[in-house]
Image (cartoon, rainbow, N blue to C red; front, side, top):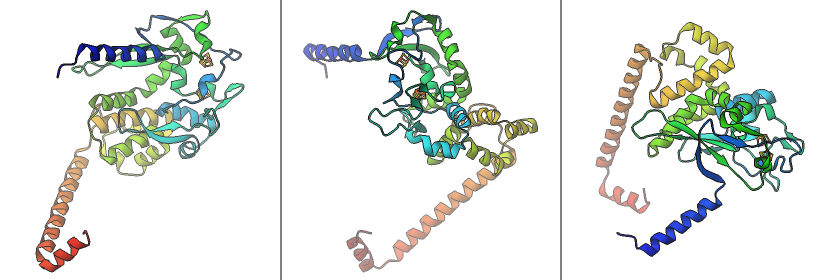
Length: 313
Ligand code: SF4
Ligand code: SF4
């Protein structure tokens, strides 16, 4: 159906209005573009950006924060997070739980500033520069670019200090966080790109475990048949046993493999054979139960069927 000109103009006005209200500056920036910005204790808007926000916690965010606070993953998740889904996907993620005060403040903000500053989440490090990835439908990897977020309350944009985006990101350690989270971000990006794909509950549970609870993943690796299922070099096993950061990197690589088959994990032949046998046994059991139900239904007398229908069974 053709849209008439009046309606088209009205729609375009609405688009323009919403762009004008947006805090995102409509310009794609590269790593070499410059930005005027400075944020420091004493600036008039200090900590104004630390309330009423949603902070999705990445695996490396949780690793750094729980270490900083000297907590177990379980205790950290219970005290500081709420479960939500990543926008545009069914993937579950831990989100920072805001305080129940009027401003909905971050649990780590005080009038003096951020109490976990050197371990703050990557979302706080990106601000006011967001990263976006443009992925062509026929390409495996995407090309990243940056956007600037300019909110009225943020006075940092009025400061003289100028940097390239690269310099700003290095100062904020954003690149380090992105590098650590790289495999995980690839999984999220792929899930967003595929959009309509339905993940089974088991995949969603695995995603949440790897994304937020490394203690649980460690238990899964060392106290299940995990190590009997994959060909993993003994020196890698020793490394992930001794070093939590190595375990984190390993867990994210494995997540990418188990969800999308990407990466160089190799399932042992014996494990593959057993998995096939389990699948066949499950299919046989399903067929048996179906047959049993059908036989029972056929054996019923008509008056029994009528009674069940009355009871809504
Ligand atoms: S973690 Fe720190 S920087 Fe980030 S919102 Fe909370 S107080 Fe602000
Ligand atoms: S509002 Fe902007 S300048 Fe002010 S504290 Fe937050 S990031 Fe820094």
